[in-house]
Image (spheres, rainbow, N blue to C red):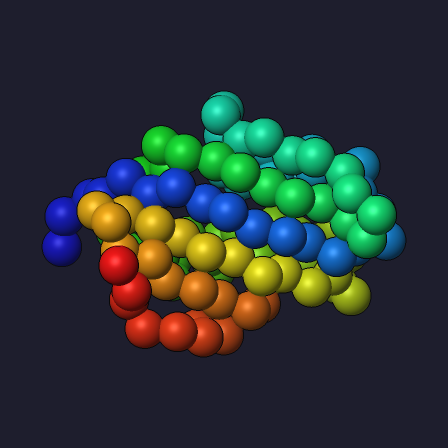
Length: 97
């Protein structure tokens, strides 16, 4: 399998937005934009390199849970015009254009 470049759009409901924000920066690297909102965090990132969205989502959610094990994640990963959606570790929707 070859490496692809993904964009991420996610919302994270957490009781520890500062801790989770720091964990996200560590897990995903530079270029991650984390904004606090009323219930937690909104995350936007581009240029994240990986083999598949599931692997990247697993890394993202594991980083979040290492700080707040009650956190909830809704994420959409897009590469090559194809988007894949996740809730936590669970794959929600097949590839869509």
